Image 1 (tube, rainbow, N blue to C red):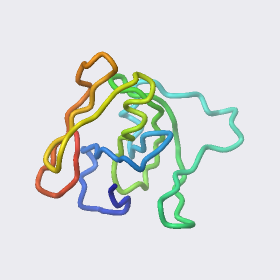
Image 2 (cartoon, rainbow, N blue to C red; image 1 turned 60 degrees about the vertical axis):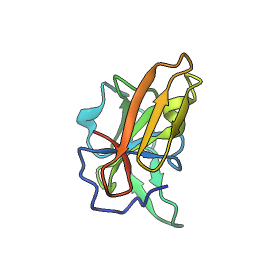
Image 3 (cartoon, rainbow, N blue to C red; image 1 turned 45 degrees about the vertical axis):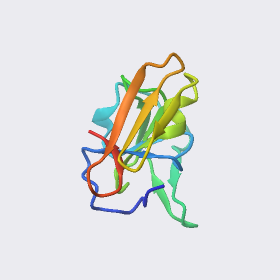
Length: 126
């Protein structure tokens, strides 16, 4: 788990988050390879934190080019979060690791990404 309001995480980093469910949360829509047309939607989804009542408004939704899963763009999020479940659920993937490193593989054993602890106890991908 990671604190969603920790401002020590630079925005260019993507922290792997095991509590982030149903989508990745990113701060910059330029990271999207595919942007969904939400113009006909009545309301964009909000991002809810662990703390009751803490919600962030999203401005866009889409997908990355290189990893599975829906991405919600919330510019006020304290960090870019890659949902561990989104990374593995569609491809029947797995993950393994320890306090220093995590390796995420698809169902065929191909490495999707590796994340490292860079000394601040966040497993992140740069």
